[in-house]
Image 1 (tube, rainbow over the protein chains, first blue to last red):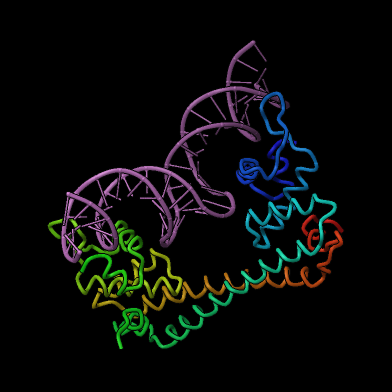
Image 2 (cartoon, each protein chain N blue to C red; image 1 turned 45 degrees about the horizontal axis):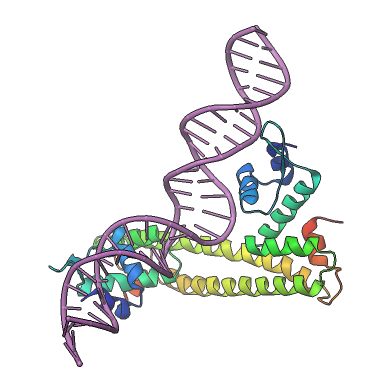
Length: 129
Length: 129
DNA sequence: ATGAGGCTTCCAGTGAGGGGAAGGTCAAGA
DNA sequence: TCTTGACCTTCCCCTCACTGGAAGCCTCAT
């Protein structure tokens, strides 16, 4: 398979696939013409990576997950631990965003949004009392 | 005021303040020795920027907000519009994260997390049925 | 005179790729 | 056989909002 084929079959852009090779996540063979030559296992790994990234795991997390996936003697404890850490980070981000949302939402609802210059949003940002 | 003073009074790192000058958000004067020389209005602007950034506005948003802030004839409508757009982006991010959270949460709770290699998380990521 | 700490500029790196140039390769149609 | 167009390669720069560090100047206290 050439890169275009794995790209359409995995849903990942060719650029991303080359990048994943660059950073050592996959190691496709090369044809005599220099083209990357992907096996089914490469496609499988790329799909794995795509799903893990879609869940917000970092590239380094993915590296660890791939290693665990390929380690037949892994303990599911290790995977769960990584996932729980990631879950905690997601929760933290959600809380941060929620706090921003609430504050900004209050400001927005207190602003008339008309043609006059008086604006509680700017007033708050400027620190005025 | 030197940069160290505005840094401690605004809570922004000196590096960040220099960066804000680089990209034209502030324009502090210079002393004869080449040191940046900040007026109270500069400090005020930096505090404004710090608060806007803390609410998640991008630098370009901040540029617009500062311009609106300094435009005495602005319409509060323009500010509110910007804030509402930002609010929508925040909501989208929260929804994305929440979806990740739910999916990952289910996987985590279905994983025993013991010393055995069997792991629903990896199974799901690998696309196995 | 020396040392500490503050200031300056410039360069490089972060994460996870994206855009695009310059050039090699391949298969199909005229 | 030639050409066209699609595909592939590497390479370098760009993103965003900073952050770290090096090398060197300035100031003040001892």
